[in-house]
Length: 113
Image (cartoon, rainbow, N blue to C red):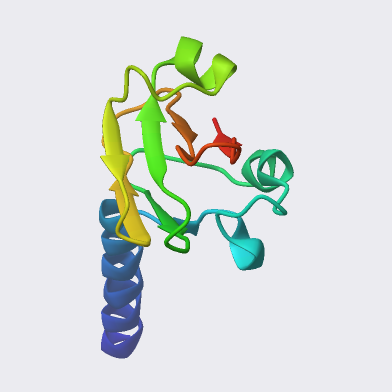
């Protein structure tokens, strides 16, 4: 009986730890943050929650720029909220709501909403 209680306690701790840490979503899955990846399909198959992270992996020719909705719709980085060029960007989803990301390389309008 004590073993069962200890096991149940460990499972509870693991579940609480998982909830506190959140999930990591590798943007685009195996295809990554690239022009050939169907990011809309990828994103629609994911469930994002506060505390999760988005991991963007990309080559030197790309970037990740968080923009307001209007700039997302026009694929413009004029009013960038945040900009990343390190090739392996991790962004924490710290609050609920929609965030908009584009690649800022000219002619590379990769978008993720």
